[in-house]
Length: 464
Image 1: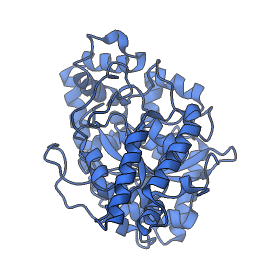
Image 2: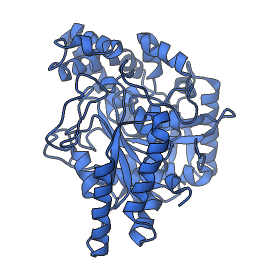
Image 3: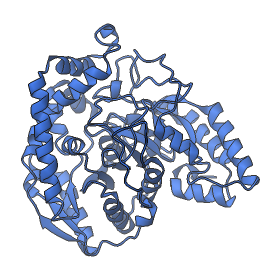
């Protein structure tokens, strides 16, 4: 089974359903790879080896008995360790919650299980899903380069999927936490429309900004996972009730007539030349495929949201951590503690002012997306940064604000995004770009992503 670990989620699923592979075989090989590489990569907070093997064996028996097979039957996946798992610790990247054991599964975990997925473990994340790992926790290592950033906060999910330690993983995104690790680790990531995926059973960073979505090695894989995850949920009043499309059916490899908008001033201001060049190369591919590129002007209110994100996130984060902070303040790392203190010090007027800007930006972006199908932007203002540079930016609030220029506004507005890998640099670091769609516009994003992937592909891997 050489190379099995780098099969796509979709392909390994097809082989398990056909009988070419068994769920047990695939799970055993995945766990063996985790045992071999995890001491170096630190992508998992918790590996669920015994439970995963028991699930795989049960799924194999069900197939032999002719029972109906779920869309993810037998496929090993991982979930971020802020998603509740019944009877299993959910630490959310903290030490203060290391003994928290939920008595129920998050809705998305339930949906993975119902779809037949094998959950092999819970991936590591930054403390409370904010900007830095807790000082007492070993941070995941980027398999492309140990000297470069993994992206946060879904760092472990990005590393596990990129290194072949899972066929897909769930991440969350409040200011860029699906997009940064997807971009840094060479993955496809979907931040869905706000409410498209239930947040029930996810420990929040900021409830009005949090999104849950898939991180995978192909667009088809992301589409398959999203179809399983999406849908209404009576446990989450913000979950949308709109019908869930057949996202994998959007894999049509055709973008003729699709209109892509780009604001060259917006995507070039404070952005490395290599990133802008990646956007130009991607747009050239789309034009060759029949898409139309048009210049647009992004709403200037996006900048106000970037600068104010720490207030919105801080206020909501302080509310989420109220059972622990400030009573157990000494157990917090300095970066998350600083965010909570920002929230505790913010005024109600500051928060309400940003809510007004949010509504303004959302309306302006809705109007702009009536003129184009999708908007292209970078994910990050640079290629994956080295750790020294990124650690310095995390410690400096202004630097942190600049880094979320192309991510935070779309968490505020709730519009869906698709992160796509766009090849490697000469130093073998992943390149990427982001497409932003209309609310509930995931089908257009998947259509565009499938076409680009079909034309360019991305079959490079960081490790054998």
